[in-house]
Image (cartoon, rainbow, N blue to C red; front, side, top):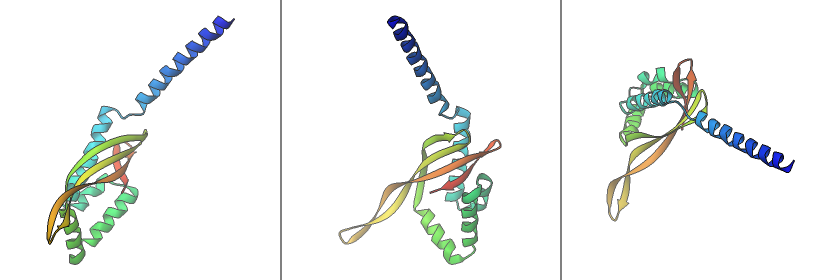
Length: 151
């Protein structure tokens, strides 16, 4: 009886490990989805750096789309346009660092940016490059991935 119990326990333990491994594989996007998500994010980043905000809109929904529409409205003011342009000119080299699966239709993306900062060294001001991260939430709408939020 004890032998049957131990054998049954070992079989259940092995079956449990195989299910756990199966779930881990399903927690990642397919290669095709990773490419699609990367393409959307890289397109938006390229348009952002060129200040082509209108071209970003087809890749966005919800809060991200509203925020982008607000940026577009700000560019109508020469003062705000110059502020936005000045801030964007400090950014460079956006690079996707991480793509995580939250669910089948939600992705979390981390982008690392180069950012030029002025630092006082002695009596002089010197430009140095630091890095900062932005986080994006994408959601699948039908067959298309779109950015819904960013920070």
